[in-house]
Length: 423
Image (spheres, helix red, strand yellow):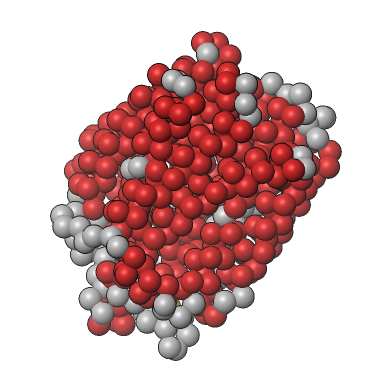
């Protein structure tokens, strides 16, 4: 299982890019959790905590494709590092001023979210230039999803540890400082500095002119909703148990389940189209969310949280391949950033809906939002099977860079890389 991942990490710059992007994602992976804990510690209600986290997620969703398009046009360093600095300053302002007055608190989380650097889309755009062969790129997508779940496993525990040792305000400051260091590691690397997007057709819709990409984004909007609702429902469950630490364990268990699922998924070669495979994975993902509404004891609930996460990383890894097959030429970073955006919008709605649901009908109602989101995602994929079955002609991670990198379309073809390949 590990041999394929080791082969990828041995490629020049691969380990640095993965580690830097992983560390740089810390604020976006845990920022909503830190905001919820910070707001509750300051005396804010569940509804306010959910609303601030939703504002953060929504502003991230708006900023990601815009920043991703900027990266496709002017390169990574000119966008990624300035954005990371401004985002961190927004969170510093929130930590220093608190939740009163509310207008300043909302302004701080909006700035922090909007300027979150599109590191995820940037890394996925870099993989073809660093790895060359299609099979290695697809395995890197799976490894990327696994690494993301490492962050979602360790991140909540790290945040709750910072809260326990210092305060929620300190957690906000530390995670964003670490995020800037991660972005710096990526943008100073040779592949990031050399990377350029392929020529793109001038079109105001950019990546969104692809019907298949729109269908995929619609499905992942609801998966984001499910994950966002679990964030708030998990806090309510921990409060019901009288132990704040339970929340960190639930979130870590969900991430651990996804990590294990991603490792297994990436360890084998799959046949058939990724679009059909994604349909089955999403069905299993939705089935995993439904039992959370039972809200049993802590041990059983932790096990259910882990089970609910098993198919998340496989769904993401498969979605990365689908994005690559449906993104119009020259829009690769923007297309991957739109995937992040749909997660952000969905999570924003999930946190916004779950807070009132918990206050109206208790913790199970908050987890019911997650179940509904999973089912809705499955229905979207079922309804758009025909559109997803037709990848965009000329799509793919076609990037250009300096000599020595196998990142032009001809070099990719020499290594068997074709966006029409059935993964």
